[in-house]
Length: 372
Image (cartoon, rainbow, N blue to C red; front, side):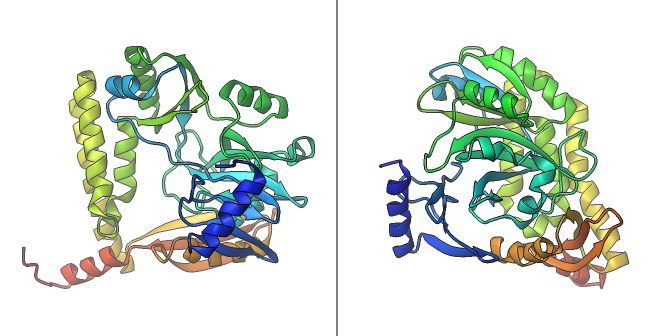
């Protein structure tokens, strides 16, 4: 594949013709995004006029650390924290800072809040730079969970850098230097390891697990830029706890995959298999479900509340429209309210409704029968 802007543009034209790309708009700005991987370009690759923003490729998950390192890595790798947030790519197009979601949509929330998250002067110096980052915190409009230590609003963490029209990443050490030079906030880094050092890496993971950190991303020092993810037990339990009250809304694999991850972690690291971990796992399932039943009796619905802040009212309104379109109808958001606070920010509140769980509880709590 010709990985220059011209070659990528030709591939996107072909993807449009084959129904693998879609035309989108953000206000008056029109662009094209890949809705599926196509001829070497990742899903979420986007074209804005002559600017090509490469998609962020998926990263595989290693479930057994020792064999996973030996099987997948051929050179030393860097270990960085996996932050519990949502993935964006930030860039400048025709003088305007924009943020793309993983799927290639312009995110109205992140685009609106860019001046609060990074210094836009960065793009005066490096206009072709693409900042790959995780946005996390209780004020995010997409995810219920957030990392420990972030108690308010949202924070941005840079985990990769790319260039316009060039799929692939700036090498890790060069990225560290670029982030230092521009004062970019970065994901915490935990050093450089060899594939034959699983026990040393496991000690790092034990410390992250104790802090409730989601896990790590391993990034090889090589031209092939091999990456892999590995999660902590705390992450598995947190994922289950956050979504257990929406048990009926998710495919069974959401929970069974996480239970299998935990079993594989404990089999490899038996010292983690403590009674307290089992108790936390049980509570992660049962407590949210019990809360859902009690909440339904009071409000006649099962829902998660969201509260997020916008600098501009127009972007808040765009976000409300974006939420349903980007989720393809899988997110049932209701009860939108928009109010301006004394500091000038617009505060958007809404609820994510769990219709199947709400319907089942309506039946059960009204005396309905179950045949099983």
